[in-house]
Image (tube, rainbow, N blue to C red; front, side):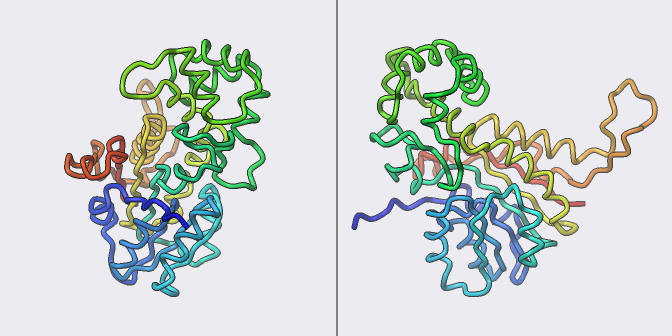
Length: 304
């Protein structure tokens, strides 16, 4: 049996420092993956609730976290149900909540999943097989204008209309390499980034409803964290980072009324305090050791 690639947790030391991990305290890892950050948190003597929507990676994490016994609880579910999961497992209130939103090496390397165009595989891209929508369905059945909107919005791709037109003209497209080839022929290969990268990102986001689920989960965090508890989010593209930044800024303000309103009528009260005014990024040494960390962006807030 070939050895699965090891996922290297990004910004690990920075994460532990930001969470202020204490022995015996409760922490929630909303994206457990193969358990990289989880292991480091448990090594500090903490208790951990590890959540992941992907049934394959959660089993890898389960085996890895077995030595920690009852200090580690693993749940195979979407973090959009965060508040209920924490309540049912006794992890509310928690001293820290972590989101590491990047895909893992394990997911990218699994050719049956269709996340990567480096090797040919079925166009799937689902984090969980229980999800109905796949990338193949989007690529082969969605109208051209809807495809163009998805690629532009979630891939931030300027050539979205051209790509969508070419995809429709070349249907059916059932594999990752065929889709990548269609995009490459349409746009040409320029620069270090493959021209299909943004299209694949857009499909993955829409198939898994990543931004909707993240937004839903973030709205529940304040009700889970204890006073002084920390929220740590590591994102890997501008759409995620912008959503996190806007959420943290909004929830750190006492009033959300427009500037022209003389007296506050919204009644909003700050529930978070910004710990990082600017994003934390990997050091040059970490990027050199783990090139996939180069796009990581960390933001930290504290419950007030």
